[in-house]
Length: 328
Image (cartoon, rainbow, N blue to C red; front, side, top):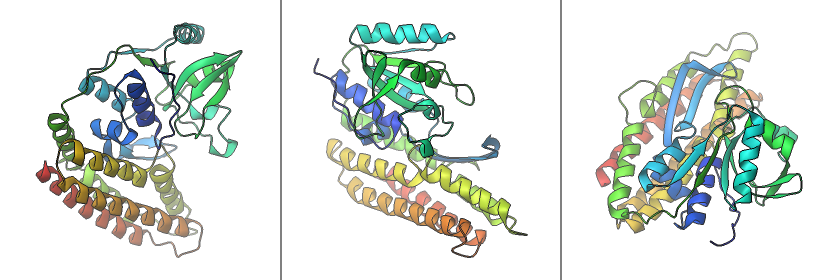
């Protein structure tokens, strides 16, 4: 097997899985890993809180990309969790001693190579361990341009952090080379699944979820200094642009997947749809910028304007995914 090559990626889970699958023998880009997992999504669930604010998500739940690629590609994926940190550390050492490439779930807050101003309690950050040098572990963190080093105690603390989506020392590896799938059959299937997700007939998911969010933004109280409204809009921007890869970023990744799928499945219509999705992603960025300007007082605090932009996004995404579904 060739030496492992670090690859920079936009998102940790899809980047790690693309690297692991490629190293195992099936060349795969990050957009292909993301698209095969039908990972593009939207959800607004007020009863689930993140930092005291309602959950706003722009992708499927953490670990789902790993599970779906395992199922779709027939990967011989072995995953393990641990109750005792010492056992989790010993197992990692044993696998590295065998020359294995090991994916891990960690908390970004406890990884010392993260700049301090970028650390926050995010328990679903995925990295790859590919070796040791003394007391340091050699890691391929896909959101960094080059490999990094992490002292053993810090890595163990990151792997066994407490809280929402606690990693529990999760390790995973691919034991055998995967087979090349039948792209012409597989790609339309996973695209249709993603369309079902974005067109789901429930109020909190997909295009309907974006409209649900718009109504919540429309009702924000701007009385007094508008602190509550600014906090909510700030949370929206953070969930959209800073957690994971963000709403626009995930749409750019999926657009790149559609470009690859157009060639592999011989469906050229997907190319123009990829361009449309890039434009939709650009519009999400404009929405985040408008929110940030209001939060910082550079523009009047007008949640109703953000709500109107969200309604435009909902309409545009609903049209896009209906057209995409019809194309496959």
